[in-house]
Image (cartoon, rainbow, N blue to C red; front, side, top):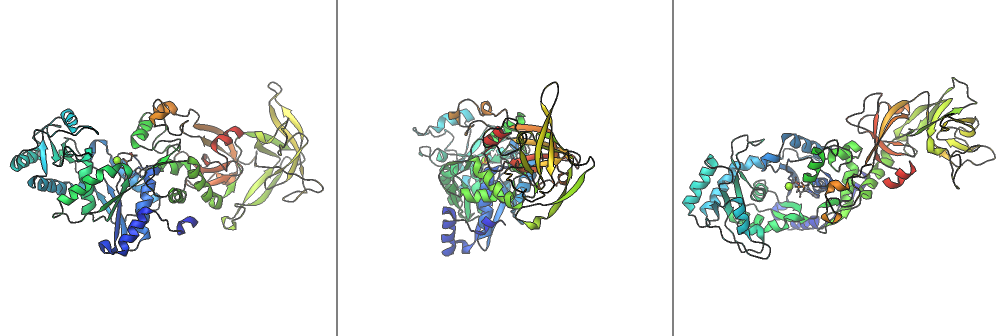
Length: 566
Ligand code: ATP
Ligand code: MG
């Protein structure tokens, strides 16, 4: 648990729950669920829902949260997504205990309840084609028209529905519809579809079914079967709530539990996309390397990028739960990671754009072990030894021949401190005779300045460095926003979201010298490269002695500013 999490969140949903507990509704018990559809991997928007549902279960005594796969759409679903979703929920720090469920577990019950609705005269088999049904549905301003099949007898409906189940009809020949009100101002109440014929196998029930219940029909009944008390969902389901309540009211005798549906606004994040449909297109169109591409807002992508579970939970706590639709700035998410890593990530040195420096007053075989604290404030993170040798690398832009005013780093004849080591003075510049590019700086070490101020003068600049003789070479991946506009999927941004992809969202730097302590960094072990940002070893591509680092987040600048600096 991080520092922030000790403070209990409050929001309008928790207020309702606390009132319900106070009046001993449901015997004071709270049961929530997180109901993903296994048709893609989870993203940071889902994390908001996970933190809400599992967070509530953790907060109130006598409470629990179920993980339920809402798997009513077999064509689009895959077992691999089920496993990935479980892994993501666990990684975020939550646990469903014994309460793992699948909506498909309830297919038989759902079917029986559909027969109950038919028997009550509340559902009928409709034989309109999909196109006809659409034209009968009406619009927001015009009422719908009743299906000519609406008044089939109970017997006829039961016979047809059973034959649908038995596989007697092709896809689309019939549907089962609720008999509600074709003139309702709420289109969801205009005799919504409850079952469709789909002759496809299902990842859980295999070929047992050729009719599948719709999401709206399944969801409320699954909630009731599991005795959910508070069914928390995003705002787009607000218009579906009357149907949720209608179905459970009609089935009250068979299924007395009636969970309360409460809606909250979805998380939208700037400069990225959140819908699984669009994320799928990015992955299948190879615009990114996969679901765990570190530029994606998927949980797998964020994890690979180096985000910590605590930083994501803290982000979800900060954005809170409201009914107001909102776009959240990426900077907020990044800041949550910085806050975590500032305290918890050990420091190390790496050079992304190396310039060789020869410390000419040290002997060729000079090897000096300098003991360095891994964190400036946290002694628990220990210390390490870094070797100082005659040749080192510094960052090319830490030297400037014609420095602008106020430049505090190395200049011809000037002095700078090597981080954790000595003050050096630049005495000469060596260039490539052909290109005139600077290849080496000849510098002199002031041997009296190891972690101690030089006598009689001030040296302001401190730069990082890595031994040129003792280091590992790493591949370093720098990320920028995946899109160039804040709301790429919004039609107001013009064109398709693909038109707004940022061509420079990934920059790969090869052979960056990094200090030896980084050769064996474990995946998920974030580190601060001093002055450059927080980095973490890539989960997939990092190998012992051949580290690959992802920049998780820059130190404090926005991405744009850091790119300018580099
Ligand atoms: P998407 O549109 O991204 O595919 P979805 O809502 O179809 O999302 P589900 O798997 O059905 O995805 O969602 C599982 C749960 O997560 C639902 O309760 C849903 O409301 C919630 N959820 C999905 N996206 C967000 C979001 N951006 N912010 C908050 N909650 C979300
Ligand atoms: Mg969905």
